[in-house]
Image 1: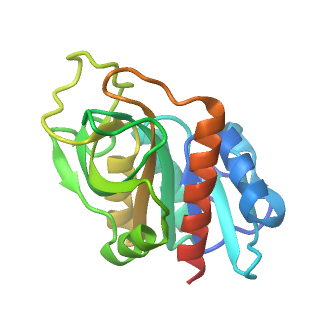
Image 2: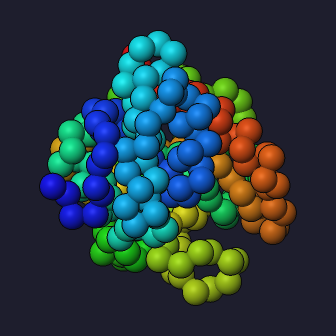
Length: 221
């Protein structure tokens, strides 16, 4: 039995990972027919069901921060997950990135957290990432994300040297996935521009649902 998740229903070999439990529920209702809650331990809501195409898919929340996400991914691997796509949020560093755009992660730089920090670089699974790029509708752009231990606020609290955006989980998930032998990819919704403009809740829901439909199609292929 995994250390953190306590599944009450089956977990699929393919999963979509989100940080927020509420977003896991929203995407489960959007993507699955008759989703069943498979985990509520620690408030990390997870759901499993069949897509309209008849494929089993799990939606699992991973909590906040890289350490939490890495631990949950290890539990999911123990439960049989073999492929996963992260749908997360990020804050833009590049001035051209605007709220509501999606960033397809081509590499993640770890500036602290479960990957050890120091700017170490990890990459998504190339096949899964290429398929995800094809499935995503515009606007989407490939780019580098810097993963931090704390939320980026535009200050100098973290030594980010390069990247289009910052988040808190992607580097840890990609690194742990590599160690576990899992195929992972990630797409992030920009919720704040470099100038501080914010994405509203309705815009975030629309962007997340669009990314979720693309991720589901890729995992069903």
